[in-house]
Every structure is written in C-alpha cells, then in structure tokens.
Length: 329
Image (tube, rainbow, N blue to C red; front, side):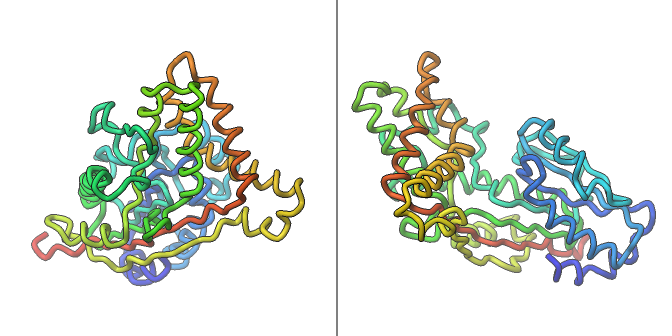
C-alpha cells in the first residue's frame, strides 16, 4: 500500500482543497482492525499533501453503535481534515455514493462470506458438514460457483466505485490446500459436536441439516483465474500471494500445555474466538425451542480444545488490484 501511494504521489500532490481522497473498508466490523493501518496511510498521504481531505468509509452489516464507540476515542477522529462515514450495508450491495470517487478499497478477512440474499433458505444446508470447505470436491462445486458469482458482482461494483488507477488491497482468507484453510479445527470440531448431539437425540435431523456457516475459502488459483475473465480485465493484478499467520494464542501456550490451568485457559480462548464468528450461523439452524442448546455446543467446543489443543492458523491470499487506466475515457 505504501508503494502504491508513492506511485500516485503526483496525483495526490495535485489535488486541491475541494478534492477528497476516499478510502473504504469493506466488512469493517467496528473499525478497529484497520485503524493502525489507516493511521499509517494517512501520515504518508499527509507527507505529500498536508491539507487534503481524507474520507474513511466503513461498510458492514453490524450495528453502527459499535463503530460509534470506537470512533469516539479513535486517534483517527482527532486528525485534521479526516472524515468518517459508517454505511450499514452488505458489501455486495451497490454504493452509488462512492461512484468514481474511491482511491483505496481495503478488506481484512471479511470477503470469505457468501451473499445469502441471492439464494433460497435451502441453499446453505448439508446433512453432515457445516461449511463448504469440509465437503468433497463434487459437493463443494456449487459453493465455489456461488463464491465466483458473488465476487464477480462485488468486483464489478468496486470497478464502478474506483477512480482510474484506484486500488484494492485484500487480505483474503484462502484455502491453501489439504486441510490448510482458516480455522479448520474450529469448523471441524463444531461439525463433530453437531453429529454427537444428533446421536444423543438433542439435535433433530432437520437442525443437523440446517446448521451451516455460509462462507467459502477460495484458493489463490481461483482468485487469479476469476480476475482474468471477462469485464474484470479492467483490473491489473499486482499481487496474489499466499500467507500463513500462525495462531497467536496457541504459540503463547504450546510450551505450557502440561499445566492444566494453562491448557484450560487456551481451550477457553480458542472456543471464544470460534464462537465470535460462528454463533449467529449456528443459531439460525436451531429450532426456536432449542436455542439454549448453543451453550452446550460451545461448552463442548471448549472441552474438545482442552482434550486436543490445536492452533487456529489463518491462511490468506494477499491481493492487490489496480483499476487500469481507460484510454477511451
């Protein structure tokens, strides 16, 4: 990103007091994840054009209250000539308010979620598994096709938002082969727990079938291949690099697992992390009279992490895309 800003420094320097340098965070949650990065980016832009107005647009389905809490004490909010806007909307929706204005689009981790609004309620169901990457290739195909259609639509919208030579920077969670897809131990433990509860007759067959997390981790090859197709050739691919980030929680505790207290602490932390991104999807599959079962599910998850401590490494594909200059205007 720093290299990109250096490349466009002449354009930044030429912008006047009426211009706005727009940066968007897709799937921003409360805005915390991108805050340090955006501070660094703003400092670099300020070095080229000290009075340029910079607008940060945060996009997510989450309630705005969490963002407002973050922004109230954020360092970003104290910077001069920096504005912020929170848009409570799916990043798969159009953004006419950004058309032709976006310089930098950014996302960390969020773009693995599929667009649930374009398919019926029966689409995200399976009798044994709870996530597409657990499925064999033949069954996974429909989710791969769904991801492809969703991403094509998303990138089409991005191409409308971006200025010429604007850029997208995505730390996209990815499938790097074998069992190397993000947090797979968490997903696999949840799948096994659901099967156990079904065998204990605490979970109905309908619930077992309906519990499904609507995300998909594409491979770097799938990402680069999609970008070579059709109208998406308006993007130049500057980077498509795999990266594995070890699980920080496991790294700190792996030499202390003989201590029951440390082992228990690690298990509780891992279960809490998995619960944060999976609970809403798990609840959707539970019958209205069976929602209380959610506590048992995550208690069992904690027990499984205690019995077999394992990290939650995150596999990424780091993508940098630039909208090509259109000689035809």
